[in-house]
Length: 297
Image (tube, rainbow, N blue to C red; front, top):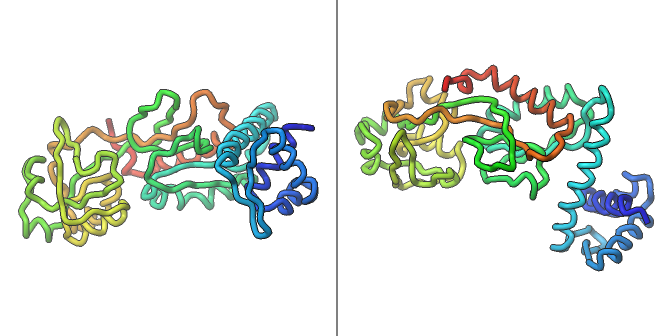
């Protein structure tokens, strides 16, 4: 039996949640899809799906196999697309992006992107953890910082300054730190998902900081700093409104680090489909219009 057909039936059953929905999508009917998935399990001698009257659920073996199957099917689709001249980009594009960056600078442009490319579906995965592109099936990731993984390639789409700030209300009560080491005597709002944790990095020095408030989102850190709950540390664009309206004050500018790159990364040895290329071009163009992302090295 055609192994590719079996894998395609299995993938659609997983993605639609039922054999009947997969059958409709593939034009095969529910009985055939169920039979083909069972044949695949027999071939692998492994149960891939838990079946119930309400839904399908992947077994642990099924989860691992689905990730492999999805990569195979995507690779086939990409290979076919690469041989079609002037074809409009289509299919599902998975992109991982840091939460705050996504809400502020990516999501506002998604309507225009999807309108320009009606054949595309965008799966925008917004979170602040490291996403392994190979293991998790994402084609692109927008990353902050320098590229550390040699298996990836990167396209830089912006630069920004990372700053230390506090509200004028807080500074009036606690004083203005003159050096990074002075932060040891201040309440610092600690963003727990920052890669450096409770150690803030400045030019030529690192300082362990403490505070009475820890938060798990950049937005919560910003609002806490605006409210006078402590000193904050993060991208200048995150605190832009407070700096503009005079509520916040920049601190320790003489100790600032070099600008931080924003990059779109992808797997080096993987053929990029056209849908990924047009997304990179689109976002690079939009980011080039943001003054906060055009600081000089």
